[in-house]
Image (tube, rainbow, N blue to C red; front, side, top):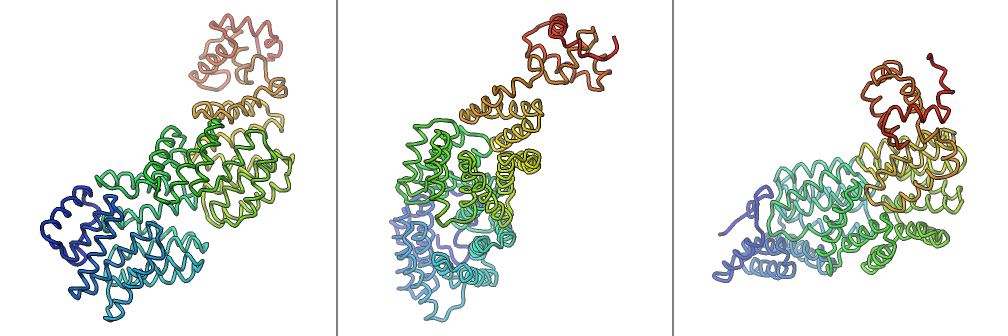
Length: 553
């Protein structure tokens, strides 16, 4: 049974049933008390099986037993895992005490070992809590060096991901992201123990969402799901990370699945005091808002607030959707005055742009866009660039610069489509349609709006669908439409149909494929509610379409 040194816990590539392992080790312990190293293994199994308090009790036994045996390194190691569990439980003062005890033991015996580096990690977290990011980066770097020196993948990976997050916080985003990618190589290759793999997965995924790095967030969230599936009985990493999965599903337009994941995350986290608890509820509130479920959104935002999650900017956008512009403006003004940075600030600024434009304050919207562009450039995020470009286009459009608005809007549309974020792409499409209409190209405007409407209808995004329907039914848009709502190309086709041309002849004359002609004819029949070519020819004659035909007879 005894397992020693760095091989005491098998690496994460192995399939592990943590509930069964915890029960088996507990049975062995009842029969014959386990030694300190075995108790450490039992404590970790208890933690991964979801018995956090029991885990701390077991690790405390391991610490005491190791001291009694004079096994200083083992005692210090147990102190680290106790601090680790307490940090995850948000009991930071107790965690600091255990970490200090472990460091004192190692200093007394003047030991140079992996545990020295492990016990530096809580110190780095304390520096972060005090706002000393530079100091935290130095501590993480020192711990990383110890991990490399002793070839300990667990310590190296924990220190490296911590340093990566600090570097992102310091604005050295590319350096931080490079460290994340390096750490994830070790994790996915099974080089680290399961408990460390789970911590790194969640930390890196959280960092990706903070940067709105959708590609990496999506990739690592999928990898975490596969990893969790291979760990039966695993309880941690199914809460906060489910909230992240909900956001991935929402961005990809899989809204029913996003709802399910958010609810599962909340059920898993309720009562844990984890930030993910409020995040999961906020994710649900956002989905209610986007689908026009106003009472449900109100109640869920209120619940998110009760769990410590700020309700902005979602609640401000809900007020805007309700027509309460003054309330939306008051909320946004208050939130903008509060300290925030990174993605959190970017979300508020994007919402502020909408609220300011709705209230006619183009100047304030312009200032919000300037700051949003600065954040996007700092974090070097494609999604943030898309948010900033869309907001820039919206402000230019509101300022009467429709032609200048098209370039940033097209950029935003291209990014959202490349990232496979259909709802945001459709919202940008609506703005492009408005710009086209302002420039007199009503046909192009309707094409954009019809595309957006299909997306909104598919997702059940009732408020957005109502807005685009109103645009398509506006007097200006309807008055500028060709007869029957036909496009210019469809009018060309119906003229040639009226002259008795076959689809092949029409294709040759217009320089398009016969398949495209067939599609145009089908669209003409649908729009005009006709079923035969003869009826289409009669329509063209009675509505004067042939009189505009300058082609040969």
